[in-house]
Amino acid sequence: MIAWEAAALGLLTWASIRQFDLIGHGVRAITGVLAVVWVIGAWRILQHGVYVSSHGLLIRGLVRSRTMYWRDIAAVHLHRSTHKLGWWELQDDMTVLIERHDGATINTELWAQGVDFHARPKLFRAVYQEIRSRHQSAAGSS
Image (cartoon, rainbow, N blue to C red):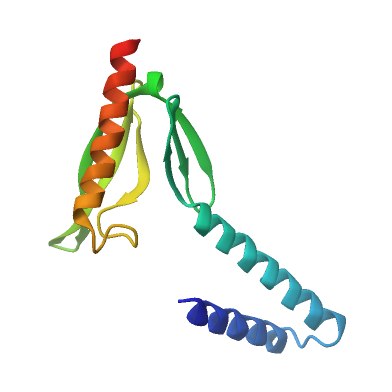
């Protein structure tokens, strides 16, 4: 996986240098900028996920993070997403959705076919059940 990313980064750097006819400092600048973007993206991917605490959930995505307190969460449930392609409806896999008291839904980074759960469907269900039980116990203690 890293080899593909490094190759793509190298190709993007080479194409940028050629496109803009960069030389000297321009080459070093574009190489440095793209390397920094790659490192930041890799760091965000490593931090990606849903973190559970006694106070609520921290949902870290690629671009942003959000904290959801248990008191703000109305329900936690599984959602099977579908995508329409013309007349066809394609079934996607299960994700965990958070429903807030104001009716808004928050998509988590938990996906049954994701890297963490693809070969371990029981673990996906266990994580989902843990989030639900934490929410229910927090709602019961309020």
